[in-house]
Length: 97
Image 1 (cartoon, helix red, strand yellow):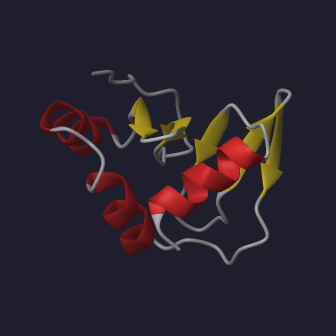
Image 2: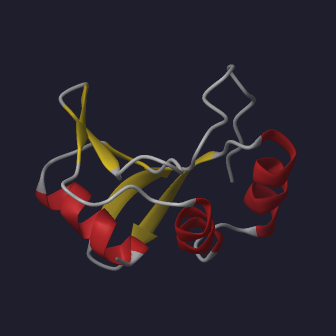
């Protein structure tokens, strides 16, 4: 599945965020609740390929340094927020840009 399809699904379901983490299926946040999308778990390469295509250089560098980077991305006619994977072991700095 392409990141644009996941973002379109996010908006269609009135979700505020899309969460992508290796080892888990994609998830969306709807009314504050995290909901898993009925898709297989993503592996590291899936997540990497999806988000690196839409990150700018600053975001890529921050992600490589901290293993987390929250950012917004807009597709024509679709607006959604994407959250990249985290280490899931601690709170990490976040990037923007």
